[in-house]
Amino acid sequence: MRIDTTRLGLWLAGASAAAVLVAAAPASAVTSNGVPDAGAHPYVGAMLAGADDPYTRCSGTLLSPTVFLTAAHCIDDLPTEGRTRAYVTFDEHYVRGRSILHAGTMHEDPGYATGNGHDAHDIAVIVLDTPVAAAGYGRLPTAGSLDTLAAQGGLNTARFDVVGYGTQEAARGPGGHTFPGGDSRMRASAEFNALNPYWVRLSQNQHTGDGGGCYGDSGGPNFFDGTDLLAGTTITGDGPCYATNVIYRLDTDSARAFLAAFVPLP
View (tube, rainbow, N blue to C red):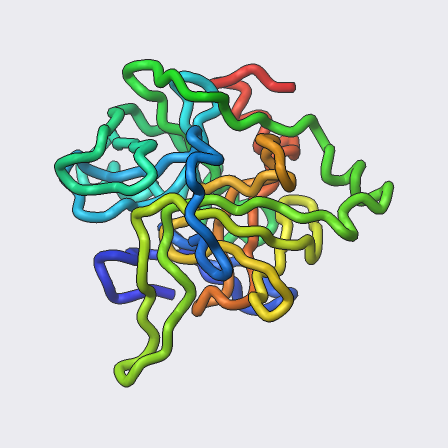
C-alpha cells in the first residue's frame, strides 16, 4: 500500500489481525494517546535521508555511541537513489536547518525482503561517523526472552513504551484522512496483544487507554514498560493508526545474528 504524500512515503501494511505483513517503507508514530517524551528517552532519535530534508523519515534507538538501530525498509530504497549515507538527530523537535545532525553509513540486513510475513529481516543500523555521548543507550534483550516471558505468563499483562517521531493517528476531514504532527519525539503506552516467532502485536486502541505507532515511527523502539530494555522495533500497523502496532522482535536468532556484527549481545 502506498500513501501518496512526501511526508509519509512508503509504508509496511498489516492486512488484518491474523494477517501476514506485506509491503514496505517508512511506516508506523507514537501519538495515538501519546504525550511529548520530555527527555525520557534521549537515546531515541529520528532518521533523515539527507542533511536538508524537510521531514524526518523514520525513528530509531542509539545502542552504543556509534550504532543507531532502525528498520531496513526505512533505508532500502536509498542506495537506488545513489545514497549510502543517512543522518540522525536526537533533538526532541526536528527543525530543518537548525537541528543537530549526525552523519553515518547505512547497513541493512541482507535478508530483508518485503512481503515476507514469516521473517522479513526488517532491521538495519546506521553507523555514525562520530560517537554520540547520550545519557544512556537502549539495551537489547537476551535470546528468546519474549518466549520465556510468554511461557511464564509474564506477557499477559505486559505493557510497552512506544517512542518515535511519527505523525498522529488519522484525523477525519472533508477530504479524507489527514495525519497531523510529526518530527517531535513522543511516547505512548501499549498493551500486549499477541506473540509469534518474529513479531509482537500491541494494542494501541485509545478507547482502552492504549497508544502506539503511526507514520514515521518505523524503526523506533518498543521498550518494556518503564525501562530502557528493547522488545522490538515498530514496523507496521493499521492504516489509520487506530488499533495495532506490530513490532519486529529483537530477541530472535535472526535479529541477533545481524546485530552481532555491530554491538555486543547480552
